[in-house]
Image 1 (tube, one colour):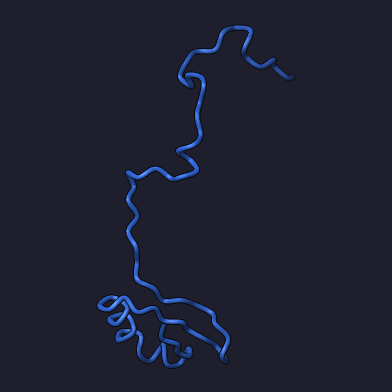
Image 2 (spheres, rainbow, N blue to C red):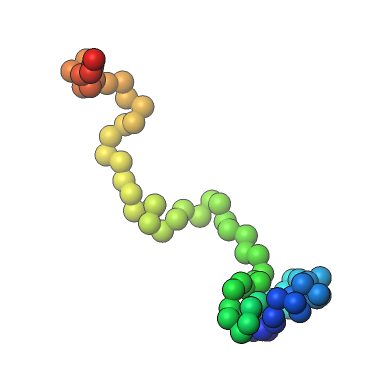
Length: 77
């Protein structure tokens, strides 16, 4: 991981982006020695792969089924 200060990051942003893109190097940007941002390679997510938590949710009814008359909420005036 490469560590740079804000001034160096602003001055060399194009070369830092090229390094991240070509080599996958992560860059830590600091202000006064305190970390404030990470510059990391972009990772495309597979939109067809279900989320691990969401895939565990099951619906035990048909959400498109029409409600019966007694299932409608009462009207509040």
